[in-house]
Image 1: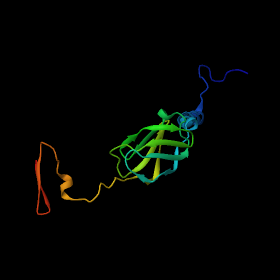
Image 2: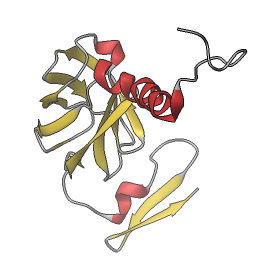
Image 3: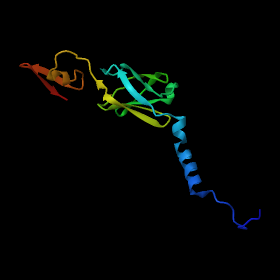
Length: 147
């Protein structure tokens, strides 16, 4: 059959290019599934508490999972596809826990509540430094500090 359009190459068409573009854009989603956080336990504790985060699509390599308690990154000590073990870092804020793996991030529905140990009765003298750089004395049941 003779070529009816000499010098004209067949085009791929807009439809075929659109399909190729959509496959290229969505391909990373097939490689890395979106992680999800189902829960974490315990829900509160002081700095240094070991927390277990359960969910799906985590990396089995601890260093491939990035966990934040609010704005502070937490070290991941153990990991599997459905569980992460992390330690609560100092400076955590009252915000959701996030897990990032493969460039995709999951947010918890609950926030971790950082607690602190009660050192005893809370008094104004707790703010006084009892060292050489500060002079302090207790007078009439009140603490007088001079820094």
